Amino acid sequence: VVTRDGQDDAWVHLDAFLDTASDRAVGYHPWNCLWIEGPAASGKTTFAKFLATLLAKQDSDLLPIHVPVMELARVMQEEGTAGDIVLTFLQHRFGPQSSFVRMLQQAAYARRVAYIFDGIDD
Image (tube, rainbow, N blue to C red):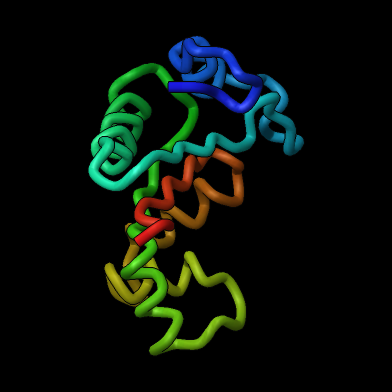
């Protein structure tokens, strides 16, 4: 795995991404985005699920939300693209009045969510 700065050790960067950020509440985290790319069947989806599991199991201040891009695109076609498309996707998946969706929305407002978009290249 080669990272965006050309280093071979992606684990160092993953560890920094998962680390707790004391300034996240004001909108700052040194690693606000992590991009994983590779050829078909190279393990990107497996890694995305592994990342979500890591976030859920360790002492992280982030709540992982796995968003399959193919499902998101289908919801966007059905519902349109106005407004918060991820919220619309979650409401479509769990129900518009779901207390689970409200909890996820609160976590997002508190900047405590790691959106994991999977299947961008599908």
